[in-house]
Image (cartoon, rainbow, N blue to C red; front, side, top):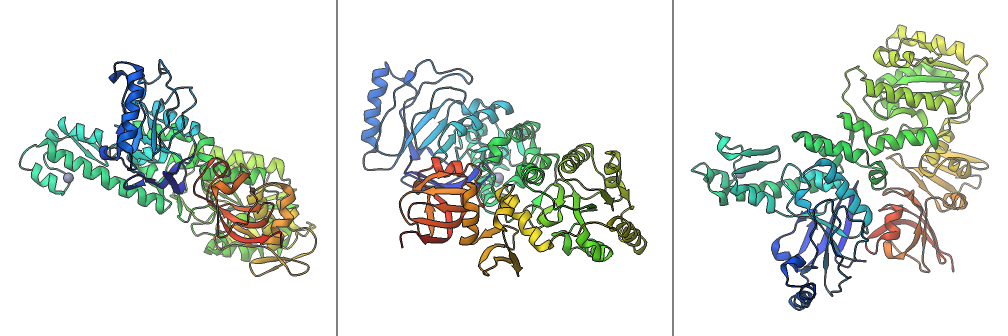
Length: 585
Ligand SMILES: [Zn+2]
């Protein structure tokens, strides 16, 4: 439990927060030497006793001020367990504890953890394993400080990986070796005929090398990069930024690829929704949690309506697809057959988007470079998803209105379908219309597509069967809202494709025991704070709609942190309430 660190926003493992020392430090941030006192390595003392006594001096120096006190520690090589273990040491103010990246020892309580041997983490695998391991072993409401590691080129990745605080030691020392830092990498200043920077330090460096001026430039670049990274977290585009920033060195690109293999670490921290457009610009985009989560939910949570006919369509640049010119033309060609077929849109990197889920994040807000060329990974991913989908959802006839390499990809998967050649010219659409007329003859009629959409979206967000529970009995869609037979609202689909439950809707889903936050014996107002949470569903991610339940209260809200984080945190907003009822009244 910490009083001195608070996480305010999250995007994947990266977070915006504040460390409350004598000066308030916004994180990600730079920890300066004046911000802490450190008892240092126990080897700096004559005996362990002496080292522990130094703690008393530390306590004394901390009196009356909120300086971070870093406890004495036992140094050890990167992959070695420290030779001795120190007891839990108590102190009144903010406390820092050195944690060895690969130690199996249970971490001591702290407000801030200092990553031991961080400066030696030059190997990408060590770096990723160290930070992921430490973040998994320490409480989510504590800060992580990695000293002697940050440079302008790797700072964004360190923050994305889960580091909250860094220092300027590396860039300052590098100045004395003539190393000139930029976001785009490190250069030897002797080899630069002109300096690619206009700061005052660089202007003075034009008159001759001066380590202090070079240190000034290096520090400025680190601080500028910190501002950029914070902005990227605020604008919810940190992942897009990382994907281009790691190109600076093969080592950083390796590190991102290794981090992407830590799927559960990323998944547990990735929000349900971002306001930004999802750019799938790189090979790594295919590994993003948003992509695998969407595909996994389409295959496991979603259940297609019982339909004899399946129509496969290509995606469009404009989202949602229905608003695009090509899909409007497809809709005209489909005409009255719409009630006798089910539409599935094929795309990269999301693979399959059922028509009912086209407004759900990120289906309604992704952008991808379109060349018409499908590379081997994209093909394999699409074919694998389509195979799995068709094993679960059966149709008797399939029409594929696809062209080019997308059509080839589907054909080469051996799919038994009528291929109509794709396209939006009059002739192409006439071919599609003819094929549909033939296929829909004698086909079953589907339920109201608007109700279908609510069912699909509810399954997508709350799990398989949630749609059936929410829409039980007689229901009707009015505008963006769905109502029961007494015209009470059950849920609405928000403009960003989320579903918002009403109190009645929440009551219908409550017996499923999922997406529930259990709170103590009180009535929350406005925001639900983490200390009030007794238990929370592990599936909950930031942005999810949740049902809040306690002895005195029942309501609905939107999660601000993951379910596991609500349970483990002692600070911060767990959920914003939308509606809450007092059960004792
Ligand atoms: Zn400069």
